[in-house]
Length: 179
Image (cartoon, rainbow, N blue to C red; front, side, top):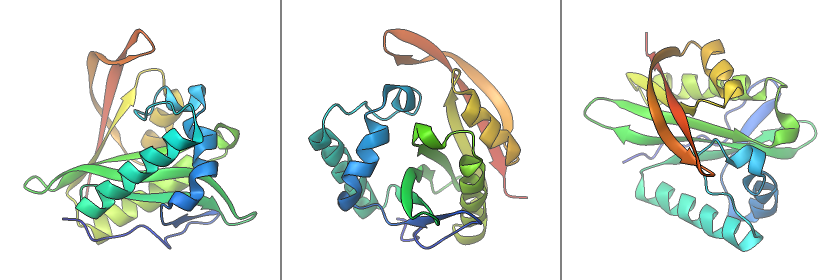
């Protein structure tokens, strides 16, 4: 379905590169961090092998055309700091969900907002989507701020939607129309 790729897109301080199994160690640094993974929907990976298996699953999703992924790399120094994605494409309604995850050491530096701006431009100008949406766990205040800074509007809340570490969290739903 989706042949578009995020690789080689860049902002002022970051660029997107292809998701690769070769980046397993760098991805494992944040995929195995409980503080990072508890609100993103990825399973916490305990071992490098689990992270590699999850990346293989992601690459398989790319091959099937159901997902678009890219790693986020700092331009200087050249360092992988996160991953961005589009998924849950609805061809009839012409919308998709957007997501992102960053290494905890890079939270609060504006990289999420910069990545989201690149993702918005790609979704609306390249993919020609009508709408982007995001589902955020109620405890993930930083993600809510990233979306709001990029023009997403709060559309509603699903109570007790996520069940993470024996705790229920609300799902905060955001959306942005291509205007």
